[in-house]
Image (cartoon, rainbow, N blue to C red; front, side, top):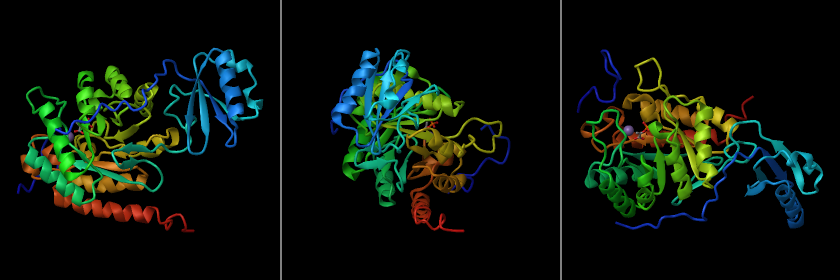
Length: 378
Ligand code: PEP
Ligand code: MN
């Protein structure tokens, strides 16, 4: 055991189960940003709803109806100029008319006030009192290694298995993943261990193969602004884990999510993974304030990845617990059956035992946070 594993450097640093392509309901794309949202009253009748829909159409806009748990919203897609002249506020079925001033609409809180819940296999992400853990190696390396890690993390309570088959690497000489062979391993391990999977897609041409092999598509930090890729994962209708770009503002990130939702795919989960900073003491600067900021602006679930956020195994448990306390909907943690032999991101990988301890702590923390004990203090 290398005693320096998982610790920051002391000296200068610089740092085949075929699944069907799951288009679900063929998504309908929104091609211009809806600038007006019409919120219907809870008891709105069908006839009242139809009056609103007809008025939107008559004004030359396309009505997009989204039924939430608490309320139904009709988004007017197109130029709302003529719609502004119609007194929608006084229509009997209408509770409120919201003029959108932000550059995004579909990801915003005005569009949907209750938190979105994204289903990945049998796992639900988002919604009050729910906290998910995603765990697994940075990269899929061998079938046996992936199987061993998957069994261990599932036994420790992980909800999803992660593992990259396509690895975007800074150096062209670094291990770039096993590609299709890696996807096949994920599919088989998922079947044997009965755990849903998430894996990164780096190229629009790989989307179909990834959709038929894993339960959730990850868009990595380097591809958050790959707009063709965002459109393609949007069209797939498959759940998407969208990581924050290394230099992205929260608004840039929400607009990237809007690309996916605009294709009709509402199944997006955000993941804060740290942004670049001047300080090499950690690999990135994990921006935990992104959690409450995103929660204030968007209905999408948000996870935190403290592995890439800090770069060192020794710091991962503290920041995972801090993410939970900050209100994140879950964490994504890199775990390797033998971190010293990991072909990528060895320094930040937890052992299965370390992950087991962390998962136990997180369960206790979630229980405490949702027990009401903190709110009831004077
Ligand atoms: C990863 O999750 O393995 C990864 C490459 O993450 P990021 O895109 O956040 O660097
Ligand atoms: Mn990694």
